[in-house]
Length: 497
Length: 113
Image (cartoon, rainbow over the protein chains, first blue to last red):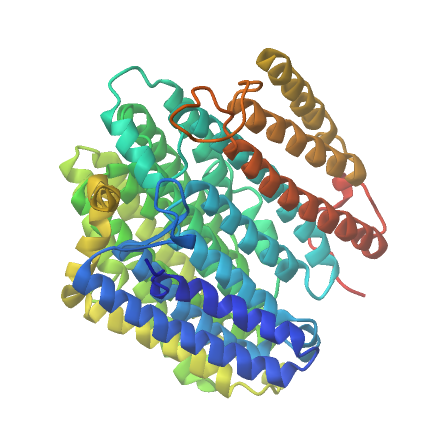
């Protein structure tokens, strides 16, 4: 039996690109070319993969041909394929964005190598079918993110980087503890196999509730969910914008994906408790994120708090655990990755151009940068969820699902959070682009064609995603099916036997 | 036997929490190292200790040792080792730049001079 290498490509391509870059030494220009080529190849591979999954269903590869549940399996269902595709798109544009924004010093010190290694870990966590393997890939991308957050060694990066590492180190230890409990209860680490065993078991599995609490603690810390988001606003404020694009668009979403995956496959018995707790913390995250986004006048802080709101909204959809809610959660997840990358890129351009992050010191930029201004406006509308832009469909399905399940208050909180999002981003738009003119002589003369190309491309992609939402519905329905109907995810095991 | 190791792992994790709640950076790092030791010991115990036979899966062998927790611990130890090394170097660098090893003073937005 030969190993099907296709599902491994999104992991292998960035990994080998990173290694080859390490061997070429400190050559920033060579690194730029290799990073761009590597991410382009990864994009092609993920497009191919998505088409393949759409045509023939979930693809599975057994590493070393050790058949599951004994060996490690890489399982790409539609959900994983869509996330891999979005990750590849964001990586490619962030790499282009970095050319003119990250600075030659950081490029010399292996910035692109670390980006590639981080993408390796993120892609691995999306595509693995083995829970311990997921832990390992979490550590891979976290270790690369530790380097990225401190790369450059400015004071704030060292200070906030230390806290970031500490928080993640502790939660990773609890991940191992949760795995230990899970293994002692189920005797397996393959996620599909664990689901099959648990759904066939007819006794008392109250111990699984304990494991559920441990897992929510771990993944909530990684995803930035209430009450464990305390590290996020401070730490994400420290690194430069291109790194923040990657962190904001990808890292928290891996945590969200892990919550969705484990809660749909493992914690299926005591759903009254586990899904209720998920819903409560998701709503609290939405509320706290809204308060944060409304209270700051610093552009960077406002969009960082918008990450929290989005994570909360997605988890409300996941907590519903029905078809409508999960389709909505998936629409919103993909939408949020694209739009957050676009917004962070545009805000990053404003920060690089003006050298300021506070709204009060800026104004009147629409005269100089009309395109940037209106692109920012479109991105802001998309983030809020104005139809027909991309945020609308996710929220529509999520709210519909909360109403169908009689969680009216949750639905209303999600709807009200849209107002908080709208107010917070329009505050940036009005403050920066309208209003009395700032001192234009203070603007920095920077080269910005690649920065703007990447930012506009992300905005246009998110608009296209919104317009094509109807055509893409079958893909999202397939993606959601692995979660509301976990048996469809785990039946690849029975096909083997 | 399992009870003793579970208690030991509890003591390790308790000490780790005590150390991590202190203000000195070095104590916190030692705390995280102890936490990982406690967790790894717990993981080892979960596969049951002293099952009394070699880890061979064969129809004739009835009570074999489960080799998987040990393989998992090996991976986890290597990761914990790398992270401890990284955070130690970072603490040194942060001490040099910020001039303090007290986490109470690591607040706000410091500016580069």
